[in-house]
Image (cartoon, rainbow, N blue to C red):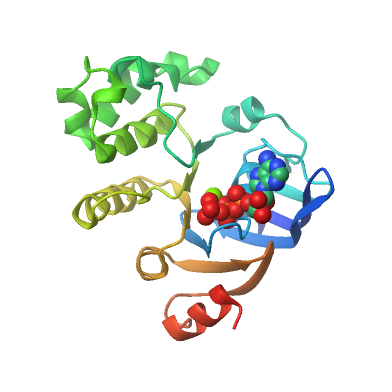
Length: 238
Ligand SMILES: Nc1ncnc2c1ncn2[C@@H]1O[C@H](COP(=O)(O)OP(=O)(O)OP(=O)(O)O)[C@@H](O)[C@H]1O
Ligand SMILES: [Mg+2]
């Protein structure tokens, strides 16, 4: 069913020099799905997202995106095809304003043409960003910076949004708000991959989840089929 598949990762292996970080990882993401990748520190979640986004090149295996092989393509090519990464640690440009940060997200040819409309959509989704559009990014609260990082990724008009630990370091109430936005973004038609350490939140938000441990996928399924106890066992490798 190639039409229903947004992303397919087929037995990739990723190395940092001699260090074998991802072992035969396979993953399928259906169009319109929210898929969570759960795992503790160092389990390889960011490595996997960065490989999908083209920032790391797998030594073996293949990644395809809407039926087209993309492994080996540089990041700007994956962005041009509609993939956007919200990186771990937000990484907004601190001394640029909210507006300038968003503007930087629309650098592809297609996104440049639709910049005004995208900006309007993002301000509608995150009214707080519109209110603060002339404020320097480093003066925003943590939650606002996370909204900005998501907004900047959306400026490239992605079909698939890759989010790396968007709740890290935020208060529970702020996290709840961000997750409501993720749901809204999904309802707008985007496919979403969420990397998280928080098991409960991940299972709640996702249609399907993958649990990683030491660079391997150790458990996968629908949240309704994965009890928290089983996920915890897999997560901690016990
Ligand atoms: N640039 C790098 N060079 C060498 N090793 C790296 C590099 N980046 C990550 N690693 C190693 O690869 C493994 C997986 O790291 P990764 O950042 O993907 O984990 P993670 O699941 O995202 O962890 P966290 O939850 O802490 O963000 C770790 O053992 C880490 O030390
Ligand atoms: Mg990480």
